[in-house]
Image (cartoon, rainbow, N blue to C red; front, top):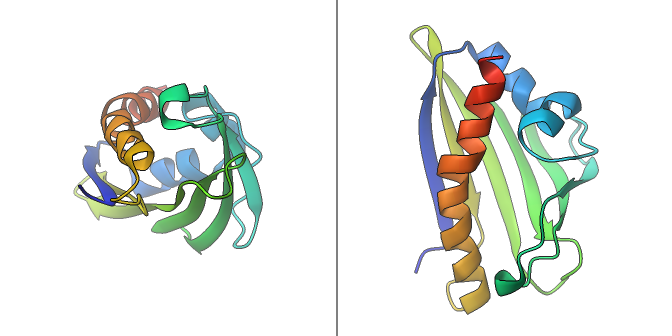
Length: 143
């Protein structure tokens, strides 16, 4: 089993447009999840999603901005707010100019390879990052 999800996607939009979608709370609310995000290192925020009983996920994600390189890289912690002993992971978004668009790399690391619930969560989220999350981001960027 693996402890990291890797996604690599080309988006036909300039990095500044993609960056705005990743760091503007209203944009995030539109395509990602309800949130109280602020693009400030050290800011603690929450994302809200539907609970998933099979993985013991409460539906509330506690996050803290760990790294912010405007237009290039955003990293934040990602943990179940209601399960302090559960998943403690990090999501990193990296943007690279690519022709007239942006190459977007998403890395979600920190899944315990020895925890069956976390491995199930990784499997579910691996598909979710690739299909649901990126699809919604693309729809948002296309207006």
